[in-house]
Image 1 (cartoon, rainbow, N blue to C red):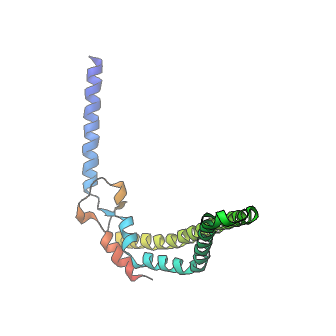
Image 2: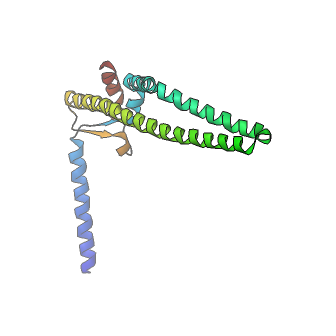
Image 3: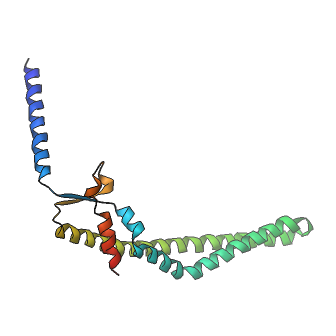
Length: 172
């Protein structure tokens, strides 16, 4: 009997807390923002990708040439292998291995540099987006701005994503 009373009291208390929290939430003005959509729509992201392409163009060209050289020598071994002496085959094998090692080293270095630069520049864009979200939240008197990914459901009217895109697009 005691357990039943305790369970009922806990149920009533939990219901009261839920009701009180929903009443408190009704007084709050909440917005939702989709950061992935923003990053996909703002011109700064496209400009970032273009500038990174230009920045690493020469290194990509070198790596592409290494790939072509490796393929050429591999095909040469396949094609002319029967006509080559053992020494010539070994020399080409050594050359292919050497080119492949150079390709791996340069490719990994390029990937690391490009990733680091992309992260640096993306962080600058994210700072602009956050600044825009903060400004919009203050101007439109929002109590909370939540990431779309953290929300299961929201009315489309609660989204300020398009406003943020418009605001950030005007910035340089």
